[in-house]
Image 1 (cartoon, rainbow, N blue to C red):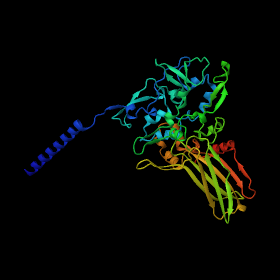
Image 2 (cartoon, rainbow, N blue to C red; image 1 turned 90 degrees about the horizontal axis):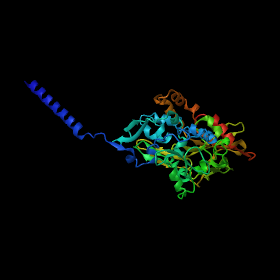
Image 3 (cartoon, rainbow, N blue to C red; image 1 turned 90 degrees about the vertical axis):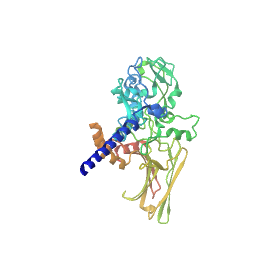
Image 4 (tube, rainbow, N blue to C red; image 1 turned 60 degrees about the vertical axis):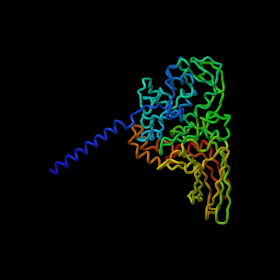
Length: 454
């Protein structure tokens, strides 16, 4: 009798528990509610791709390869650019493979036209970026997807009737496609992605603030645009010679930045594409101080209207000074970094920022103890580092998560395919004679092309 009562009591309790759970599920669990992306991200330009762009009259599909049929030189420059490699970038592909990656959002800057997307996201379940509502895209163009940041990102827009036209900066010709000459609309297109900063959650932070840095440098009236430095001006025909168009003011479309290309074979294109360091580097000052060797290094952010380095918060400038004996053996080495330091866990936060501000001069003074000038020479080097070895090792270990066989193999041996850093300055000083040698940019890029790893 006692056992039967106990069993009845347990069954009743279980029934009540199940009823309570059912009540919670039906009446208290929040239902999925689609919230527009524009509402969640306040219409930030990086939160959605450009709308579907239909074929351009006189050209066809709005692919770079089609633009390149006439704009031959510009197309060749673009193919060497970071923009053309924005999707195939191994570091980016590794980030995309993480389970925590908001792929749909990251792709908005690496493939920024809706034509390039297999699925489109216009709504988020309950406004949560982790639960996008993906819809198949009937206008998906796989060839255009592979082009990354392609010509249409800046130069093709929709008119009032929904037809594609070219947004241009020069007129006075009769191209085969519709065109509107509005140069001001082209100027700040870069900042739609290069000024994307947003906190998604405790660990996921997008911190690209080049536009803010540009404004803080005193450029609030827009005298300088990104293209002022990264798209060098030249005089040429904008299309192939046989079309008999006049020579006009044009701009390089290599979009050269800090001198760290996406592939080793692109080092030879850096100077041709317009690379110039934004730093003014003064000759090393040194003197014997008793048994010690004292040195002073001075560098100024003379030409960049943004911080050096800018963009990816994990980039940094590394200064390295070494003392070598007469046989070239290293006697001592010192290093200093200029960049950002972030603490990513448990909550992402900027810990320190020693980057070089526009117009700012950094001076590094130190001494080598027990080093005499008759023993040695000084070698001074500056590296622009994009990928640290510690991060690269993490990428190698997690390369199995990458879906593509080709990408998986490359990321597992990333040091052989992807430049981690470039040497942007090298100077030798013979302490006996006082003679110095400053390496040319051509020499530096040859050295960088043969380096592997950080």
